[in-house]
Length: 357
Image (cartoon, rainbow, N blue to C red; front, side, top):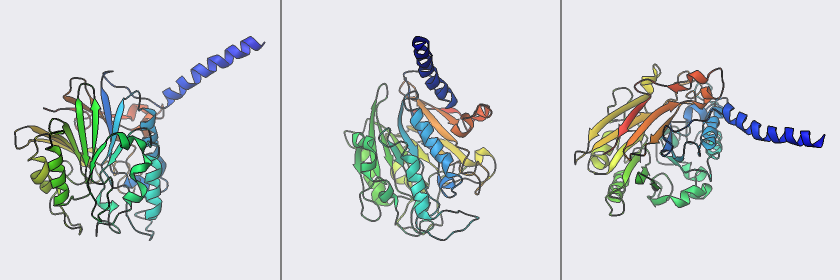
């Protein structure tokens, strides 16, 4: 009897992991030689209500589960990790978590990725000040110190102090060496970056060791929804500052090697198109710069909804070294067989290609 039983357990040991992977709805690259980066829009809608928090943790857990089969090199987050940086007053219509509880929620979700893959966050207006960027104080360095994720050690190549003179990952640059694409530099910035931050980034991309890199720049406020106009003259009190147009004029346009700008921040309730934007413009040397806004926090029922229905973006970097295929996917829908058919958005604003020069 022992041999049949041992055989039975051997079969279960082989089959059960396979079934588990199917339940997790793992995604796959179009080309086995590609690699990917994942874009997470503003998570504040998830962290501000305790009932929404598991959805964001599902997103990061899904990313961790797909690191190998999607060959994920980095996760890019557009910021606004919390609704308010420093607040203890409850407002049920707006949130039911203190700032500390929201920061802890964001930290807990990203912990799924610690020591597995670099995640690069561009802090947003809600991550500063008391409620929304009245000043430059932030708890970000406390919850996301350099030492918490060992994968940063291998790719962080430069940093610049934040508004409080603290060296943190708010203004930082990460280098990735990948087949077919050679070298990619990803730079992230604080909300409404100061002139000195833009000068630091401009000088960095112009250095001999980075001038031939393909550069991705992440900043929170850059494009408005739908019409893709650059942000300008926003009402936040934080100073000194630059809005989207200033970032373009002082950094993106003069630089010859910035190929892609990723941002979040804007959006309004309505169609999915009210949460995204995309445009292409030539820089000073005539090279195309792709600019993409992704902020789906209102897509799961508006400002007081579920935080964004789990939507994220998969950027597949094709082996031709110039094509990036964009897909919009929701692990929340993909996790269940009954909603799996809703997990991919395939409209013109959801699924498209970017070709860098």
